Length: 318
Image 1: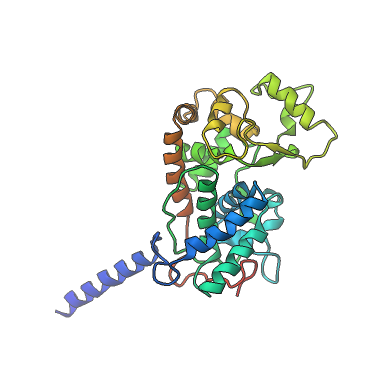
Image 2: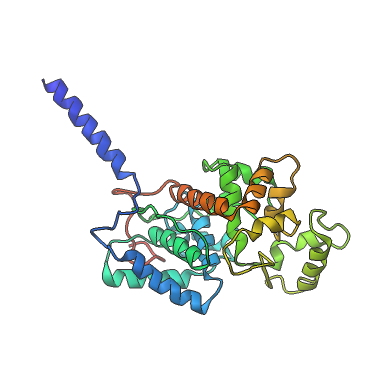
């Protein structure tokens, strides 16, 4: 009898442990039921002041998730025992931290010590995509915040000049497939990029052959040699502030701004080409896959249960 009881207890404990690791869209239903409304209020105001804030925060969320999972580690500033990820090359151009602080303040005023900074990033990303005309999805919640940063781990973040082979490897290392790669790259349907991230494609002697010639000339005028490397250019030259599928038709026309964009379509016999064509032909297909891929990315190694903490200030551990 005692052995049976022990077995039952073990099964219950195993179930309890596994349930702790599950994220759920209703995680705050009883502890902070208005969290989405609070986040929306702050980001709607931010979007009125900065048309780029959606692209900024979804990029921040992406960079956070690719380093040890979606744990808010990108938000930690340099401190004793914290080697900030913000100071590493992939994150030097990441912006929007002040808006995250504003959201956290608003949430703390209503639900102190309840909602993690990692969940705030995930919620804000979804809301801002919908505000720009993109898809909505139910954001799984329940992440906790890390107590550490991993500056060295920022090497896992895909870069703007990566080959398709390297991009695919970095995604597969996170258990994300080619469809996820193409769908998540579709976030470049809005936002801007600095000249320094694609200027090597404009070289007078050896320009990138996958660039449309008219687009090449336009970019050379926008980013002349010796010009301002931080000058911003639309990632999508057609509808730069709308979340739509024009990013993929741009790739079909050799008008992807970054090498990491165009290589999805221009690499011969790559499995990403068919995905680009499918999304170019159907915005609904893109929206559906994007939502699914955002959920998959958001599920990367979350801290749950008693792991990590709920930071009072997103910039610092408690």
